[in-house]
Image 1 (tube, rainbow, N blue to C red):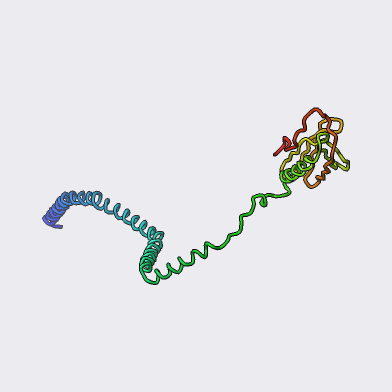
Image 2 (image 1 turned 180 degrees about the horizontal axis):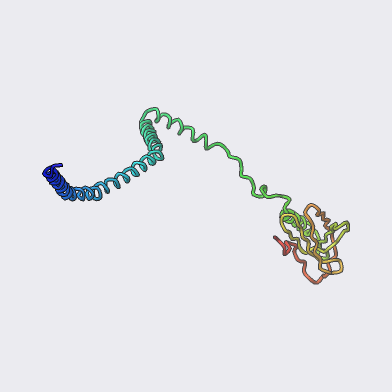
Length: 223
């Protein structure tokens, strides 16, 4: 091979390599500038694009949720506008006059009397039975002279028990409680279910003629 040709070829390769190095030196700043632009310019743009997409999604959800409300608000506004326009018409004036003429007739209607609160109370409650029984005892006591007092006879487990009555109590809903003294002066307390209470009022001689007669009322147990 010709030596001069090889020498020339080496020169060409050397020149090409030198040209490539110069090109790299020229492209290096351009590449750096491109990376900077991507980082400083395209980066925020991509961020804003993501935020814009989120905003658009929020707007879509808002319209899906509140769009019907806006529609109803517009319809309500239209109804109010129609009502205001109708109120100014002659037909509305005539209708108001007709309704006004009916008011006196409405006021003449007699309403039913309100029900007594007592009618709403369960009459089988021990408190109600006790109240009615005390009213009967009071009436019976008024017919006695000073030498006698109220006695009651009650059936308890098949036996008739007689006591000098001092008071009646209750424990709602089912229990009646009778307080008093036996015929020999012993304190007694008898508890019965309201459904089993059978009371016979009787006239009994007073145990102590010197002590004033005490009124019979509610006993200590009122639960």
